[in-house]
Length: 93
Image 1: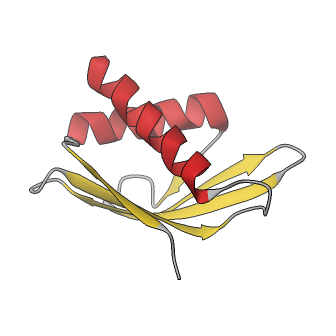
Image 2: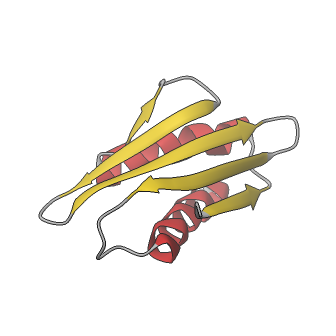
């Protein structure tokens, strides 16, 4: 079973901010870079690599993230909490 979470109220500006902030703070790379669907990869030193898929629907204002792979020590809820924190931070900017 794949862990997925939907985030609502996400505009194109917020999604753009999320990609930029994620890269600056965690080294997260979204591929393809300017696509609404794809994979985001974060290499966590010592711990391992987190890979999530993303599907952004600008019309609905939603983005769905699903955990593809992660180190055993990292929980899906930690990943989603981090994404949610970044989205909320971008909402305030």
